[in-house]
Image 1 (cartoon, rainbow, N blue to C red):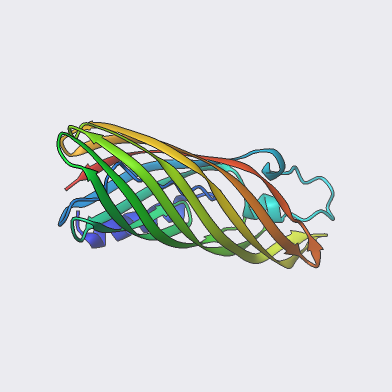
Image 2 (cartoon, rainbow, N blue to C red):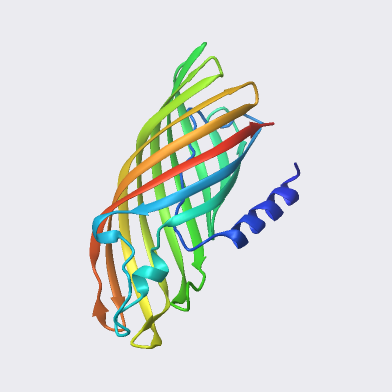
Length: 242
């Protein structure tokens, strides 16, 4: 698949995306080998818990920011990664209406049939919040720092465990009291991630789960909507290595 065709696939998936902010890491146990390309296709979900659950808006004077901007749900996901060197790769992921770029570095701890690595990265991202049931729309930008320890066994089985931390800014015009008013929110998110992959030669199936705590500082039409809580981000996909 050419890079132009991959870009068209990413754009199509973004157009299909719902409002959920579900961006998995899909790390794998190692970076993409030098001069090789990884292509992945699958989906992810955002499951807010506790104080982050989507509210049911009954009062017409209530802010619909949470319902519109931080909804739960399932989105399609696709990504591509290219191995620059034995230690670095670059990637691009589209999950719903969010696009994330990443640069990753790997420190190999053990070579051989069983291979272990420490992988760290930097991943800026951005996206838009399409209108959801006439509740308003906006955008978001953020920056993520993932770090995992991965083990690869015979090129067949992979497992990785680590953590993800990010900061995010959301902005837009959302409904309150029957009209759209400007809103903005800054949030932080951190928590563990664990995943595994199983396959043969060039094709692997991947599953992954992030469990994070989020806290948001939000202002909507002069009203503070600060809140915090846990969120689960499961992801799944098929990876093809070219």
